[in-house]
Amino acid sequence: MIPKWKKWLSYLFELHVESTSSEYNPHIYVSIRKGRYQLSTANAIYSYGDLYTNFSNTFDVFDWDKFDAKDVLLLGLGLGSIPFMLEQKYRQKNHYTAVEIDEEVIDLAYRYVLSDLESSVEMIAADAAIAVHQFQPSSYDLICVDVFEDDEVPPAFESTVFLEQVKSLLKPNGVLLFNRLAATDSDCTKSEAFFKTIFHKIFPDACLLGVEGNYMLVSPAIAIGEVPANFN
Image (tube, rainbow, N blue to C red; front, side, top):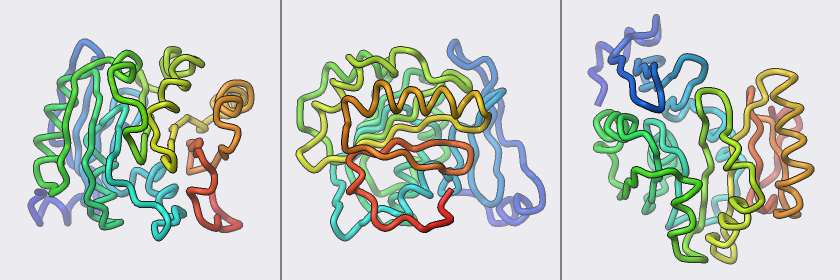
């Protein structure tokens, strides 16, 4: 829990909390900004509470009356922004299985965010591209892929084999969210090509949403409600 005085100050300027490193991330930085814990690396923001807008903007247009996510698989954890915002903002108390390769990130997530949540979170320290082959088919209502090495999606997560396996883990009415960068023209070109040539072939009912410097690939598209005309 963030002390009130730090929360107030963080609306004026970013407050440093902790810096660390690991074999996967040479620079890991925890700070408080606008009353939320933020996890950053040298070139990317990995987590930012309910202001982690790539996911929060997507959840804003979900049709929550029709979608009930009880079992959630997180591939990539950050500080736990997804379970935090689903519980705090969208009143969803779910069971989470979180796969994160970096044990330092797992430790930070538990200490700063997850220990304050009511939702149960089972954390697995493993390579998510390998771990997905160990889970039972048709197990999850919602799968969120949020895996980066600094500001790049590792190639293993762009493979047909990985996507086919993830698809097999979804329940019949399950939803997949795949976070992609779209901050530069190069990012957009890469993400759009991935969506059109690989992702869309495996998930033909998917759509691509622009979410403030990122693309969110959503399958099935019916999972979202009406998208505002100015949505970005």
